[in-house]
Image 1 (cartoon, rainbow, N blue to C red):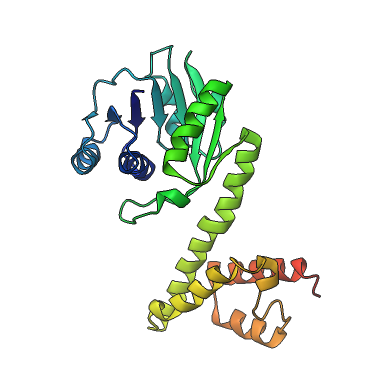
Image 2: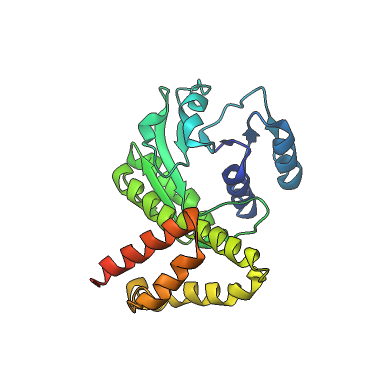
Length: 250
């Protein structure tokens, strides 16, 4: 099978690397950013182009959600399978007469951070059983966790990921602002963060909750509010209110 990845960002890089490491041959990586494509090509030994899209059986579009539809229009081959990697878009966003699918890896990707691809869940959706099986088998060469998913289910998977990853990372950023303001090395908080994450491998997150809100410690809550301002104060109030409601506290 001839496979082409379209894109040059974090997802495109890691997906290409996962394929190469697991002996899934790539015919080309294609996109607009010649500098980034050149780096990926040199590292992974994959041909690249910014001008001519190679004929292929499978195209995997790894671009931002806002660009998926426009990028999909450059594929003129009618007898091929095209999959996007978005967690929130339907496969029907792909604009062409080819067969449509989604190939969603549930992970946060940064080019400078190595990943264990075998642990990344992949969610597959296709128009027919043959294409579904093709994508399922390909993903199974990379990952131990491959599932079929509808668009409706995938929307909730992506929403859960935003809460569990994007929002949590933003809280890390806000926490670091506070520690930086007092010249306290943020590294000191890493063991606490590690233990918080490790705990939910063994305990339901709801059962693992600690802190002044779940204890309904009004003195500490008021003290913390006096130390905060602007967005961090609003976040603190909203988070504590959410905790209180979950545990039905006054």
